[in-house]
Length: 319
Image (cartoon, rainbow, N blue to C red; front, side, top):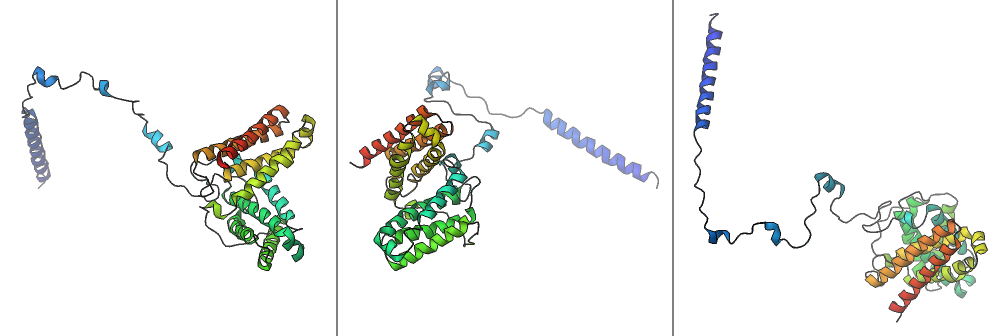
């Protein structure tokens, strides 16, 4: 009984060795392969000595697998807060959060006079309201997508749509338009005082032309150039005195130049129009830098570029 386990292990070991020997013998046998073909000189003439001789154009970029991970294929991206659409410059590169808030406050305050009475609204005030609400809708669209610190982002998207609707209704000096504009002013006052509106969320905007009338945005751009920037840059001393105002206006200009390139505005997909708007956007960003550094020659050069971009665009698209 005591020798049985040893006998069993010996039997298994012998069987394993026999199997290994069988494998070794099988491996020792030469493999059967097809005979290589015989090539004649005529056959070889069909082939190049070096296949690279027939390549046309640049060689492929052989990236490592890690490069592929760092550069995923481009695809549609969300326009949610902090995520600008593919190919777009970040909002924070055009305008800072404080300037956005200051411009909202300025426009909200400008609504008080035309909404002070039905008579004021119906005697031309509705046009003032329309312009202010038009720009406010665009500002809150930018706030909704803003990629940095900014006020009122939680309510920005739904308020954007309300402001756009109120602006459209102010084309006519009707009682309903007055009531809606007054309600929007009250909501803006609440926000400025730090009281959230708690509005239901709204989807990202795809068609920017539904938010604002492009002609009103361009009127604001012309106003910035003619009434604010040109006087402020008349002399080096004037720039020193009004540098903060120049930086503010330059950022608003950069934002608007970017906005008019957004989908569905007139000419938004025309390469020439986009180039003019992009040139203006870049020059406005340079003007902001020059104003912050109190560099009058650089500021004047940037303003000249802005004016030239506008002139070139008008020549191409106003006939």
